[in-house]
Length: 333
Image (cartoon, rainbow, N blue to C red; front, side):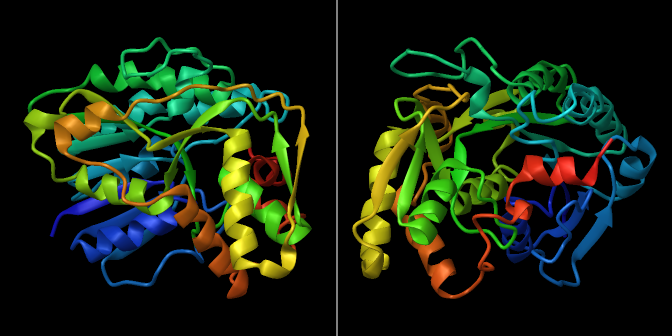
């Protein structure tokens, strides 16, 4: 049984990914600060949950015993510079990255999968943003995600397969829910206010369902080295403007909650001007992979979760659903 260590494994994507890894027959080590707790993770005899900081190299190295592959997701995500201290973002998202890679290689890890972000492209009017497109980061999060990528590939070798993934904005239901991601925000507003607030509107944004992207992470553990070693892959599916996304959300929520209709759409300015049309042609041509779910599927899944009472009644106000606010509230240093 191969052992996989997942940094950030108790987060939004981690709580969807870990059960998929266990179902696929892997032993899993979750290494996470547990800022949101670990209630979203299953109990399983082949799951080890470690509360740890990725900046603590000794603790991280100890967790690597017997680990075959690492999926590195841990970071301070969506961190606008006016919200958080730049030092915190730099130390977690950048300074400790290469030491983690080196420690993993020295511990005998055979494959290191780095989850970067398609937001590294910043703003682009190119009709298709491929993996070769220049990186134009607009926030600290984008900047440090991009700066880590070449540090990883410095250590690519026949015995240490390095892969970078640049996923689109993730959407859909997770046991550790986030309502600070585009589709999730719009759905939350539609269901609970009867009004969808669009921030900006003209920005182009790729999206991907949380189940699709986590299924890919599992597959990435098994693709032959010759196909993935030293490679960077965009991971997206649907590219629409934020205004178009709002229309999709309105349609689905009115179908799922007829009593909420008609749902209004209002527009407000935004300081998040990221806009890009990401091409995922490479991953499809190289690996034969493409997403199986749509934005509408993500919205319907969220609607079902609301109907089933899987969220509290305070999704519009509870800061636990917004990553940056939780980090600020905890005073993380």
